[in-house]
Image 1 (tube, rainbow, N blue to C red):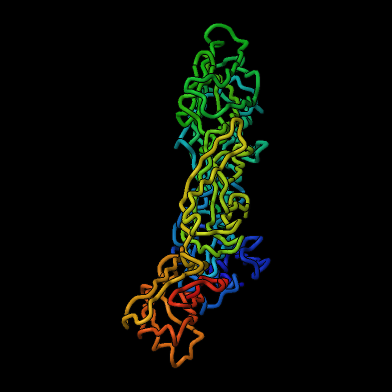
Image 2: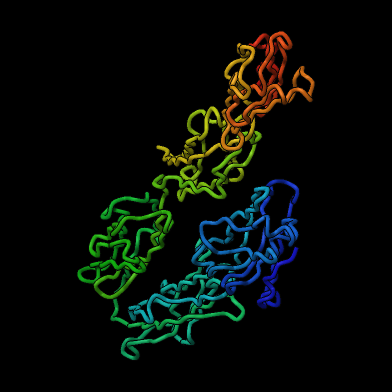
Length: 556
């Protein structure tokens, strides 16, 4: 099983894993085909030979019509070789954000017979985002009375990449008065702390300008810089102190703007202006508002768990003398059941033969719910009593199959309603209705209107006169319901039959070909056919039934 990802040079720098096929002899694979490619591959790049990995030959491709079934057109299949090709931009950060594993899951569909196969393409990160600070420079005020060893939390940089390509450490330009250490939060993210190495003297130097550099772990590494402007202030013996270094709070999504998140608080042992604390909020993204006097943090707009699941805010408390303290506010957004399941049909077969066996595949159904946990777990069912069944195929995929005998003559079409319901409290659901048409097969024999006919014919009748008419009906459609009549047997000699009677193939009218003589011929039998054979017998100038055959029949 090969992959064409190396054609673009990636095989020289990064290994590309090939798909693992568990079975090629089932209608659908129980485990998906797996590919691994780097992000940002050019359009038209070969991911792998999908046809070969599914066990399909090139000669089968025109009839099997191998294609990709997906809501977003990231991939396509070449009609000539069955290669899985990149058809859209694969930006890992846009698709998966900070997820440690980024995989696109979709189905490959082949026709005649209709089969589908699960495909999993893992998108590997490349180092295409350098670390970036929110500001080109920021200011830090430090009192000249600050003791060596005091630490200050500095501005952090953002990096859109993941793993080793994400931000790994910080560096500070050389300074005899300051040094830098790299710290790590419980979630693994890095942040820098500035350490005062020796006492500051405002009278000797009022300002210090340093360069803070953030580096990722790529090869080669990418970096971003910001200027740290340190202003040395006059002595203020006591800096503010927050009650907590880190505040953690859970907040439900969809709370209205203006909702209180929490209130931070810092104290200062100084008096007067040096004890008056003003609060500042950094990195809010216009989502939260901080009351600079009270420290109360409120929401500025509606939050959406499906967009952002957590926020990390830096709050600074500054006293009137210029001393500052910082704390971190970690806000975890809690999911609410605010998204109904979405139902999407793929490869829907709207026309079904009435002799389709139970288990015939009618449609492939995808269910998507943007919520998480139980709010995103969905159950799919059919409404009412219909000869169809929903079968779970994977976590979010279902098959619609026949589950009973179909009869077009009884029910020519079905309006099938499918309902998807999540497990939220209260649950949300959505429904969609499709119309399935049952097509005709020739499964009904013609039926005569009478099981026996008795017709009296006087002797010396004129030749060519109508002596009887038989009629049969067929509930099938089209050619399957068209009926023709013919004489197939008689107790008269074959040579003499055509000289006595004939039948109109279209109307079923029986004609006398000659004048009958009662003294010469009192009765004779005819076997006529209306699509299926029937038996007639004529006797004493009349028609009466002798016995009825299993299919459409009568006797003349």
